[in-house]
Image (cartoon, rainbow, N blue to C red):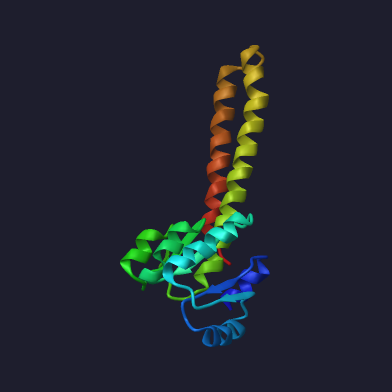
Amino acid sequence: GAVARLRAMGLRTILLTGDRQGAADIVGREVGVDEVVAEVLPTDKAAVIERLQASGRRVAMVGDGINDAAALATANLGLAVVSGTDVAMKSADIILVRSSLDAIPDAIALARRTLRTIRGNLVWAFAYNVAAIPLAAFGLLNPLIAGLAMSLSSVFVVTNSMRLRRFAT
């Protein structure tokens, strides 16, 4: 289910494993990944990620073991499973505390929504300041009203950000 959700989000999925090619192909077909890269040594996992990055891709890596640590650190976004090794968790950017892999598309969706909210807040604050600062500088805006408007602008930004607390996928 997690792989299907990732693909529905427009993301390309790759199973990168040290396991034998035959077993990895079977698992890859069952979960529906786009590509299977098997029989890869731990140090070579990082090299695979570097090649993907060199081709212009942003790479997220999910791992749980010592053999994933270098790849987690190399990826643009490293996600470690909380049940994994300490080395993997220290190498990752995000630690998934749920045992379900559905946490991966949830985390990506939340990150995307957060980025949209930040951009919206920046546009609002920038537009407000572009309009209000010249008015205040030329004395066309009463300082009391300017202070109230600035406070309302801050309340708007905080309230807009608080909507993320209701995030549900």
